[in-house]
Amino acid sequence: MREEGHILVTGGAGFIGSHLVERLLVDGNRVVVIDDVSTGSLENLERVQGDSKLTVIESKVSQCSELGSLVADARFVFHLAAAVGVELILRKPVESLRTNLDETEAVLQAAAARKTPILLASTSEVYGKSDKEEFSESDDLLIGPPTLVRWSYACSKLMDEFLALSFMKENGVPVIVARLFNTVGPRQSGEFGMVLPRFIEAGRRREQIRVFGDGRQTRCFCHVRDTVEALVRLMNCERARGEVVNIGNSNEIAIRELARKVNEACGSDSPIELVPYSEAYGPGFEDMLRRRPDISRLRELTGFAPSISLDEIIKEMALADTEETAN
Image (cartoon, rainbow, N blue to C red; front, side, top):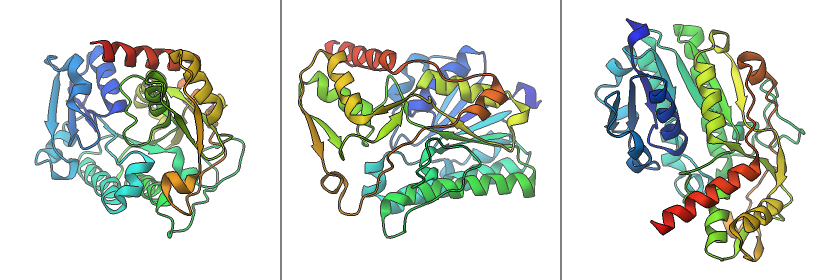
């Protein structure tokens, strides 16, 4: 019976995926993870590795021989497997595009057989070069030119959205598209350019905190626990199927101010260095001055809005890093 089936999480060994897996297990679900650990790590699942309700398959989603049966027998699929991080996209654009497009198509094709419901994790990057004060799901999207690799990630994730919603229209696959804004928290790595763990690592080591651009660009940071709560509530919301939904905290902060807060939380006097985008990412790189979500649709559908403050997030991440270093 579908009601007794497992929940499948692709990318479940990643930062967000591993926190989601923990939450689903706590709620009493059987969970299957498919992850090739190219950007995630099995260490992220250490806390739950002995749980009898968890099965972990180390494989690319599209190359998993059991994908068809795993999706068909699932009562819900969270598709989180994707290329992540600006630095990875710039370094390996072809691989990143193929990862985002091929893996999503494979999951959707598998879901079509029994109309397994899917939540597709998308990104705020799809809003592109819009200069609006806050982004809502019905906004027109303005993407930069194809000569700038930086925009390839946004285009691939937007294509994922179109593909998912087309599968819903043509094949009856129940789909939810969740556009995630900057999600942060314990276990997030700065390896692929994620700003907050990168700042915290520098502050903890009393090294220069490198702020790209002039530091006046603003972002909103959502704790991974809030993101996971939103994802679980969307899974359980029938009205969300067929919808595109922003997930993020709507409180903004300038990146230079973020660096100052990290210094304060780490008890550090690390110098804050402004680094031109051209030096960090190469010539022609474009960034957005603001990226603030309108979360009224999330609130209306689920009754939930992220609320964990940035100060709490920074303190928790700085403390977690300190404890890991001491062990």
